[in-house]
Length: 160
Image (cartoon, rainbow, N blue to C red; front, side, top):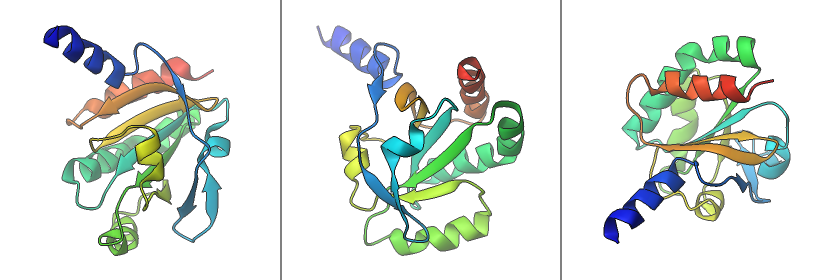
Protein backbone atom coordinates (compact mmCIF):
# COMPACT_ATOMS: atom_id res chain seq x y z
CA UNK A 1 0.00 0.00 0.00
CA UNK A 2 2.84 2.36 0.82
CA UNK A 3 4.36 1.82 -2.64
CA UNK A 4 1.04 2.62 -4.33
CA UNK A 5 0.68 5.81 -2.29
CA UNK A 6 4.21 6.89 -3.25
CA UNK A 7 3.56 6.11 -6.92
CA UNK A 8 0.30 8.09 -6.97
CA UNK A 9 2.04 10.98 -5.21
CA UNK A 10 4.82 10.97 -7.83
CA UNK A 11 2.34 10.87 -10.70
CA UNK A 12 0.32 13.73 -9.24
CA UNK A 13 3.43 15.84 -8.71
CA UNK A 14 4.22 15.44 -12.40
CA UNK A 15 0.73 16.55 -13.37
CA UNK A 16 -0.03 13.38 -15.29
CA UNK A 17 -3.40 12.39 -13.80
CA UNK A 18 -5.36 15.59 -13.77
CA UNK A 19 -5.16 19.25 -14.51
CA UNK A 20 -5.97 22.05 -12.12
CA UNK A 21 -7.17 25.59 -12.62
CA UNK A 22 -5.27 28.41 -11.01
CA UNK A 23 -6.90 30.12 -8.03
CA UNK A 24 -8.22 33.68 -8.13
CA UNK A 25 -5.37 35.27 -6.13
CA UNK A 26 -3.73 38.68 -6.49
CA UNK A 27 0.02 39.08 -6.18
CA UNK A 28 2.15 42.20 -6.49
CA UNK A 29 4.92 42.77 -9.00
CA UNK A 30 8.22 44.48 -8.10
CA UNK A 31 6.62 47.89 -8.69
CA UNK A 32 3.81 47.16 -6.22
CA UNK A 33 1.12 46.74 -8.91
CA UNK A 34 -1.50 44.10 -8.13
CA UNK A 35 -1.69 41.25 -10.66
CA UNK A 36 -4.46 38.65 -10.74
CA UNK A 37 -2.87 35.25 -11.36
CA UNK A 38 -6.01 33.75 -12.87
CA UNK A 39 -6.41 36.59 -15.39
CA UNK A 40 -2.69 36.63 -16.17
CA UNK A 41 -2.68 32.97 -17.14
CA UNK A 42 -6.06 32.85 -18.94
CA UNK A 43 -4.42 32.86 -22.34
CA UNK A 44 -4.00 30.55 -25.29
CA UNK A 45 -0.26 31.23 -25.02
CA UNK A 46 1.69 28.96 -22.73
CA UNK A 47 2.87 30.48 -19.44
CA UNK A 48 5.55 29.05 -17.19
CA UNK A 49 5.23 29.82 -13.49
CA UNK A 50 8.48 29.25 -11.64
CA UNK A 51 8.19 29.35 -7.84
CA UNK A 52 11.48 30.32 -6.24
CA UNK A 53 13.12 32.06 -3.30
CA UNK A 54 16.35 34.02 -2.88
CA UNK A 55 17.71 31.44 -0.43
CA UNK A 56 17.04 28.51 -2.85
CA UNK A 57 20.20 27.80 -4.86
CA UNK A 58 18.54 25.25 -7.20
CA UNK A 59 15.79 27.82 -7.90
CA UNK A 60 18.31 30.43 -8.94
CA UNK A 61 20.26 27.88 -11.00
CA UNK A 62 17.03 26.93 -12.83
CA UNK A 63 16.09 30.55 -13.55
CA UNK A 64 19.66 31.28 -14.71
CA UNK A 65 19.61 28.27 -17.06
CA UNK A 66 16.24 29.29 -18.51
CA UNK A 67 17.47 32.88 -18.85
CA UNK A 68 20.16 31.70 -21.26
CA UNK A 69 17.59 30.22 -23.67
CA UNK A 70 14.51 32.29 -22.82
CA UNK A 71 14.77 34.68 -25.76
CA UNK A 72 14.85 31.72 -28.18
CA UNK A 73 11.88 30.16 -26.40
CA UNK A 74 9.91 33.38 -26.80
CA UNK A 75 10.82 33.76 -30.48
CA UNK A 76 9.80 30.19 -31.27
CA UNK A 77 6.77 29.68 -29.00
CA UNK A 78 5.70 33.06 -27.59
CA UNK A 79 5.93 31.55 -24.09
CA UNK A 80 6.07 33.82 -21.07
CA UNK A 81 7.89 32.95 -17.87
CA UNK A 82 6.64 34.42 -14.60
CA UNK A 83 8.99 33.95 -11.67
CA UNK A 84 7.01 33.93 -8.42
CA UNK A 85 9.08 34.66 -5.35
CA UNK A 86 7.94 32.95 -2.16
CA UNK A 87 10.31 34.94 0.04
CA UNK A 88 8.76 35.98 3.33
CA UNK A 89 9.08 39.26 5.23
CA UNK A 90 12.58 38.32 6.47
CA UNK A 91 14.09 37.68 3.03
CA UNK A 92 11.96 39.68 0.57
CA UNK A 93 14.37 42.64 0.73
CA UNK A 94 16.86 40.45 -1.19
CA UNK A 95 14.58 39.97 -4.23
CA UNK A 96 15.09 43.23 -6.14
CA UNK A 97 18.92 43.30 -5.79
CA UNK A 98 19.14 39.65 -6.88
CA UNK A 99 16.85 40.16 -9.89
CA UNK A 100 18.69 43.34 -10.93
CA UNK A 101 22.04 41.59 -10.58
CA UNK A 102 20.89 38.64 -12.66
CA UNK A 103 19.27 40.85 -15.30
CA UNK A 104 16.37 38.41 -15.63
CA UNK A 105 13.79 39.62 -18.14
CA UNK A 106 10.95 37.63 -16.61
CA UNK A 107 7.97 39.14 -14.89
CA UNK A 108 8.60 38.81 -11.15
CA UNK A 109 5.64 38.43 -8.81
CA UNK A 110 5.75 38.36 -5.03
CA UNK A 111 3.86 35.71 -3.06
CA UNK A 112 5.13 37.04 0.27
CA UNK A 113 2.14 35.71 2.24
CA UNK A 114 2.51 32.43 0.32
CA UNK A 115 -1.21 32.39 -0.49
CA UNK A 116 -0.69 31.07 -4.02
CA UNK A 117 1.92 28.58 -2.87
CA UNK A 118 -0.50 27.18 -0.26
CA UNK A 119 -3.48 27.19 -2.64
CA UNK A 120 -1.50 25.08 -5.11
CA UNK A 121 -0.13 22.81 -2.38
CA UNK A 122 3.47 23.64 -3.24
CA UNK A 123 5.76 22.28 -0.55
CA UNK A 124 9.10 22.05 -2.38
CA UNK A 125 11.16 24.63 -4.24
CA UNK A 126 11.94 25.02 -7.05
CA UNK A 127 8.47 24.25 -8.33
CA UNK A 128 7.55 24.89 -11.93
CA UNK A 129 4.09 24.92 -13.52
CA UNK A 130 3.25 25.10 -17.20
CA UNK A 131 -0.14 26.72 -17.76
CA UNK A 132 -2.37 27.18 -20.79
CA UNK A 133 -5.83 28.76 -20.77
CA UNK A 134 -5.57 29.18 -16.99
CA UNK A 135 -5.15 25.44 -16.47
CA UNK A 136 -2.05 23.70 -15.13
CA UNK A 137 -0.91 21.21 -17.75
CA UNK A 138 2.44 20.22 -16.25
CA UNK A 139 4.09 20.33 -12.83
CA UNK A 140 7.73 19.76 -11.95
CA UNK A 141 9.73 19.97 -8.75
CA UNK A 142 13.50 20.24 -8.25
CA UNK A 143 16.12 21.21 -10.78
CA UNK A 144 18.90 19.34 -12.47
CA UNK A 145 21.13 20.85 -15.17
CA UNK A 146 19.59 20.23 -18.57
CA UNK A 147 16.01 19.92 -17.34
CA UNK A 148 15.24 23.19 -19.14
CA UNK A 149 15.36 21.12 -22.37
CA UNK A 150 12.57 18.89 -21.03
CA UNK A 151 10.56 21.97 -20.08
CA UNK A 152 10.98 23.41 -23.56
CA UNK A 153 9.78 20.16 -25.18
CA UNK A 154 6.58 20.38 -23.14
CA UNK A 155 6.14 24.05 -24.06
CA UNK A 156 6.50 23.16 -27.75
CA UNK A 157 3.96 20.35 -27.40
CA UNK A 158 1.30 22.78 -26.13
CA UNK A 159 2.10 25.69 -28.43
CA UNK A 160 -0.26 26.16 -31.36
